[in-house]
Amino acid sequence: MNINKKYKSSVFSLLFSDPDVLRDLYCALKGVELPSDVPVVINTLEDVLFMDQINDISFEIGGRLVVLIEHQSSINPNMALRLLMYIARIYEQIVEHENIYSTKKLCIPQPEFFVLYNGKESYPDEDIVKLSDLFKSVEPLGLKDRARPVLELEVKVFNINEGRNEAIAKRCHLLAQYSAFIAKVREFESKGSALKEAVKKAVIYCMDHDILKEQLEKSASEVVNMLMTEWNMDDALAVRYREGQEDGVERKSIQVARNALAEGISLEIVQKITGLDMETIKGL
Image 1 (spheres, one colour):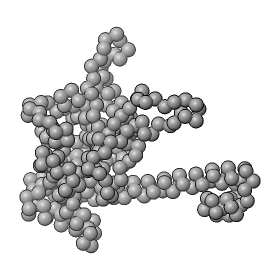
Image 2 (cartoon, rainbow, N blue to C red):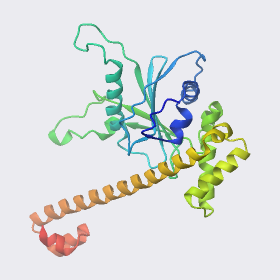
Image 3 (tube, rainbow, N blue to C red):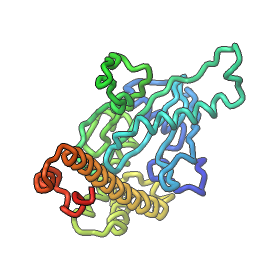
Image 4 (cartoon, one colour):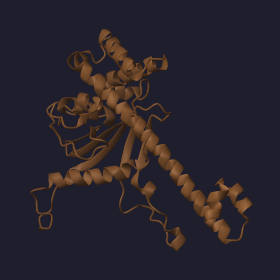
């Protein structure tokens, strides 16, 4: 598997960074059949990562440019924006030796975006995240929002936790096994095992029950280290997300307090409205 070792590969990228496997996975997600000789060209960016970890895979297949992202933490509501910037970098690579200012019309592959979610939080089998959901409204200016945005990007989200989207799991056996492995790690965790011990137990269980057996026989210790790194990173992301939410709530409360004070509302009422401490309100 052609993965740059200076980055920390995820278990997902280790398992699915293979053209034949990606072809099977793509067919399962789309519900289509493609000939086994349809070429798959992997063009994953290795420098657009969180903390140097590869959890994205991009590839060309049948005139499509597909970007896959695995998520084990909460779905990022800004995912479509992230992918807009990501796909621009991919297109830069594709047309690197072309003159985009010439009169010649370029031919580029159509993009498709998928997120495979296997986090702990409840999530529907399928969902769509849109770039337009992030756009500011122009109605306060007396303008009307366009019925159809001039720029749009849609991300199809599939819940790949064990027992979900079974039609996809049946069509892609490796994905089903990967989901079973992750579920087994969480099961051992729920029974009181520390993360590293839970991963080791899951590896032994899966090898004994012919789940990812071939892959684990080759890379068991690597898988343990990868998953430890991944889930520690997910914990860091979750903390960062919560801190960001808390900061955002406090900023809104401060703005509400400023507006209320400007209207001459008493400090006591402002404190009840915003929940801010009196010292902060007096400082405003």
